[in-house]
Image (cartoon, rainbow, N blue to C red):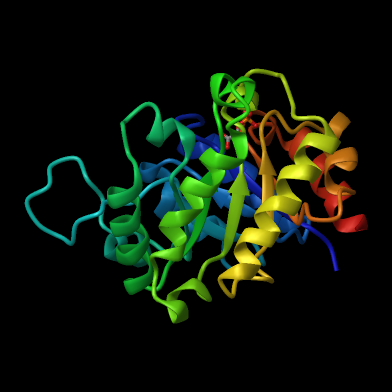
Length: 243
Ligand code: PEP
């Protein structure tokens, strides 16, 4: 049935390069999830028409439309053609100080607008070294558990992204990823989210994609750097399709 490949383009690419990448993936008949920067969303949406890829935003405002300079509302994202949105990416948690209450509001706004969130969790290196990785992930997951039960069924995925592996070239070993994914699966199951896909993110590349995706509870990958090049994204997606 294949695994999920989600591409987080972060603050990279331009209108032309983003659209070219999107069109090439569509022409291949792929069904990845793409997360371009805000100014590229509507154009990438148009480039994807007729294909099976899904479009998502990298963040969403916790507020409704109104006087919030610089913010982008969930309704605007849906209007631009998004069906998915990242919430709680570590670059938002650590770079912008976003935590529980704000992230819960973002989840609720997204769901109300019909967007399906990909909710990111993961510990820092210091937290892992202190033996607190599970504690931190449990704390991050607590935000999801605050959602009403019907809303929990509308999530697209949870992404486990150890902060120490994001953009560093250092990847969790398949065993580390598998162990944390099994833990997350157990926590989600306790709250009726047994079948919610769990993605791994953190320096995924064509060379490590297979070992990560063969772990039993790894339902796919969230890819940053390696998703900016057509060849590496294709190679990762080829692995995902074989599974
Ligand atoms: C990410 O930011 O979601 C990510 C996983 O980035 P990278 O693959 O570059 O580590």
